[in-house]
Every structure is written in structure tokens, then in C-alpha cells.
Image (cartoon, rainbow, N blue to C red):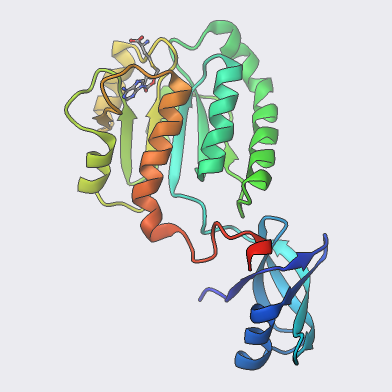
Length: 255
Ligand code: SAH
């Protein structure tokens, strides 16, 4: 069972406090007591938190000690397989996809990934992990997307576990992304975006063999990072109806 979740009104590294309506609800309606455990969003993350003080009355306050961070359910069930291309553009895409809620990004070593980028990527991945950490904090995500090590396409396709697999393709014309997601209701989606030079015919064949659905984002050729962001935005607008918890998107100061 999921525990009740509140968004802290104020917090420090180790403690959080609820005031106003939230504290009143906890103290009076839920009869909160010292030692009880709730989920508290503080610092942009969800923590398991233990009540240390309950003060009912006209200015109610409930104080907590923050324990470990919890996996979030505000993350979209989206796995982005992003071909490695020019790092500055790629990194912009990684940052924006994080803000938009992706759960996981796998940088793909594609045939048309430039050699020097492919070689540099094994080290660069640490920077990508720092970027998603910062973007997660900034966007008040309650979880940080996982960035896999750079992976050859073949390996990534063989191990992909999402329920539906979607290949963003600049040559597909028939099926828009939205339509593919609406005709295959799902609880998890993998989206693959090619490098600047696009996927090679052999790579397209490989996707085909693994039953990926080709979709279009429209009649224009987008830069890879634009395609990634647009695809995540479209997918999130369809998936988010069922997956965002009631607390997502509210800032602590708004409550
Ligand atoms: N080199 C190609 C374009 C590659 S664009 C050319 O100039 O013809 C890089 C990636 O962005 C593509 O592999 C695809 O995944 C995605 N992409 C770009 N435009 C798209 C569109 N209109 N619909 C779907 N995906 C697109």
C-alpha cells in the first residue's frame, strides 16, 4: 500500500515541517502521532519520514525527521534510447528529457555516431549523470533518471524490456507518434532517436526484426535533440494522465 504523501512547507537536509492545512489535516483528521511514517516531498525528492512533533491548534505544525529517498512514481515510464551525436546538442537533449520526466536514458553507439564521439562517450557519461542530477533537482523531480553506459544498438535492442517499442523515423509518413501510443495503451514505452546522420539501413532492419513500430513527428526533418524532446513531450501528454501522482508539479511554497 502506498503511504500518504505531503509536500513539506519548510525543510533542512534532515528535517521537514508541515504547517497550515496540511498540518491541520494530519493532526486532526489523521490523528498523527510521533513515530508514524509518511512520505514527504522535500528538497525536490520524496523521503520516508518519521513524525517527531505534532502541534495541533490554531497554528498547527507537524515536524519530521527525513529518512531515505524513495523511488518516485512521478517518473514517466519512458526509456529513451538516444544515439550519441555532437555532445553539446546531445547534452541539451538529455537535460530537457530529464525535465520532461523520462525514467531512463541509454546512449546508443550507432553506426553513424562519429568515431571520436563513440570513443569519448565512455568517460563523458559521468558528465551526463551530473547533468541529469542537476536537471532533476531543478525540475523538482522526485527521482533521478538512470543513464546507462553507452551501449551498442544490438545489445540495447536485445535487452529492451518496455512493453511498447517505438522508433522515431524521419522517413515514416503513415503513423504519427500520438496515434501509435493511442492504439497501443501501455504502461511502459521505449523511444529510439537516431544520430545526426540517421540510422543505417542495417540498423533499421534490426529494429524491424525486434518489432519496433516506426512513427513520425511530422513532415519536417528535426535535429536529433529536437526529435527527442518533441517525442518525450508527446508521449508524456498521453502517458501522464494515468501515471502522475496527485502531488506532482506543486511547489512547496504553493501549498
Ligand atoms: N540524417 C537524416 C536526419 C536524421 S535526424 C537526414 O538528414 O535525412 C536524427 C533523428 O531524429 C532521426 O534518426 C529520427 O530518430 C529523428 N527525427 C528527425 N525528424 C523526425 C521526424 N520528422 N519524425 C520522427 N523522427 C524524426
